[in-house]
Amino acid sequence: MQKYSDMYDLFQNDKNAKQYFDKLPDYVREQISTRANGVRTMENLKDYAENLLRGDD
Image (cartoon, rainbow, N blue to C red; front, side, top):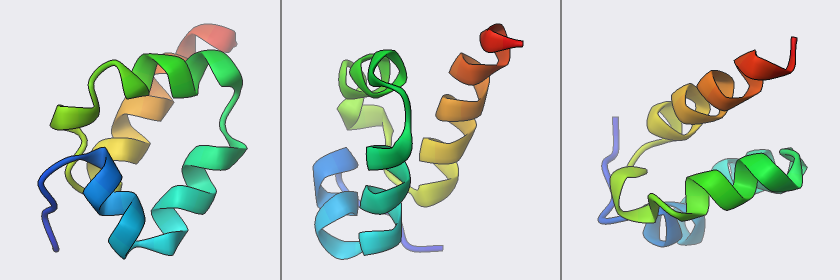
C-alpha cells in the first residue's frame, strides 16, 4: 500500500481518496482535516471516517 506524507499528498496522488473525502459529511471532513498529517493512506482515511460516522447510528 502506498503511503503519502499527509492527507493533501494522498489526495493529489489518489483521486479515489479525494472523491471519497468529498462525499463525507461536513463535520467528518472538518475533523479529518484537523489531523491531516496522520492521514497517509486510503485505509487511514476510511478508518478515521468510519469511526466518526459510527456516532451517527
